[in-house]
Amino acid sequence: MRKVLKKILHPVLKPLAAWHFRKPREYRYEDLVLTVLPTVFHPGIYLSTSILVEFILRQDLNQKSFLELGAGSGLVSFVAAKNGALVTATDINPEAIKGLKANAEKNQLNVSAVHSNLFENVNPNDFDVIVINPPYYPRAPNSNSELAFYCGDEFEYFHALFGQLEKMLNKASTEIYMILSEDCELKQIREIASANQFDLEIVHEEKKMQERNYIFKFVRNE
Image 1: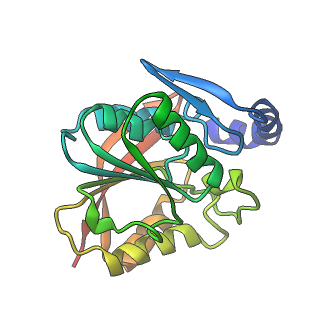
Image 2: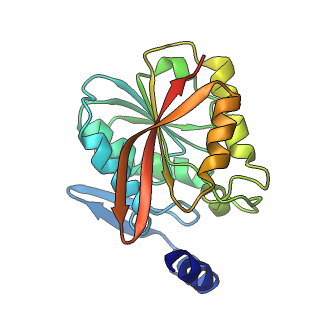
């Protein structure tokens, strides 16, 4: 029933959300104050960000090199930095990079913001921990804001993600975590991972507001 309602309401809610976020909005998390720019994935209205934050808070990140791939507002990155991680935050959306730099300065946190399409401008071997909150709806994105939601008609985002990791990653100790909702095509994504020598191991499962989310750890299946 929840999925049916979500599909019915989505055409109504999407333009309302676009109208509301047509200008910068302030978001607060504990003592962090973020300005979320238009077209940037907002951490306050999607469950995945809060679940990732809670997961990250339980990890020992002190002095560990940490990459948030596709950081959006950067909330996960800023929380990681506050907990001792050496943080790099990337995004394909230039507005997200602009916001990341401004929010890092405003909150006096040392977070390096890098404009990158996946691992185009960063090397996965440089990091101890990588976290990913990916787009997963199978449709071609038509704008910067849609890049946060749509992974391509043929799941191009996941083919590129796992393909790049399969070729580039040779540091066995790097821990990679990705959050996905029960609403996405989990079977398809796991098949893409497997074709590129990765298994997705569930390390956290949580149901919020009738939506179940999973945090997966990438494990080499060679």
